[in-house]
Amino acid sequence: MIVRKPFYFLRHGETAANVNDRFCGIHNCPLNDKGVDQAVEVASYIARLSIDSIFFSPLKRAKNTAKIVAIETSSKLIQKKSLQECNFGILEKQKITKETQKIIKKWLNGETPRKGEAYAAFARRIKNVFNECLNSSNKPPLFVSHGGVFMTLTNEYLGHTPPVELANCGLIYLEPEIHGKWTITGLNKNCFLKPHPTTL
Image (tube, rainbow, N blue to C red; front, side):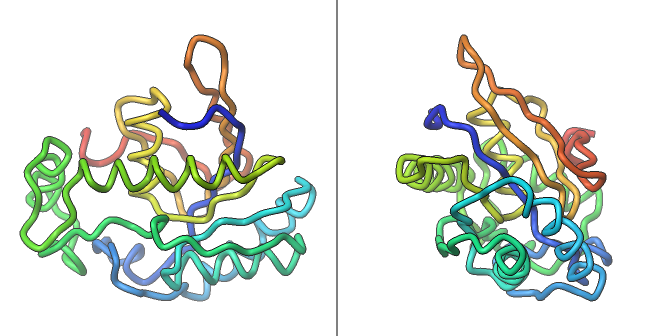
């Protein structure tokens, strides 16, 4: 269960791997020019939200997105290794195809790709780091992380099924309701909440 406090989630800006439909995982690919522009654009919006803390993944694409946002917001930057993307093992840097999506479906059901991180362990890691960060925050913080992190968080712990995909620099506000439910609100034009490809 996730600590019932509101928070913001921002997926990193675009990378070459995103453009070329490749699994990035723990590969340290940087933002491309469009990704930098996306981060600058969303930063101007986030500056109006009065955010004290930004928790971010150490992978370059998320770290650089967070740093761009922090310039506009003067928020405290806090790096959390557990916010990094899943290690997809043999799928790292591979093209996203119908065949590789079948492997991801099996991963979601407990069959881990060779040299990869088990889904259960990944989900547990995500739960623990979000709870740690939320327990230490007095105001809604911002998390800057990855698509797989968002999918797992919302699917496993926030009652949003089937899994959904968040576009690059999609900004989301998540707020607990009564009866254990959560409201997920898109805050910018880049949100594009849609079914994750593994559900299609």
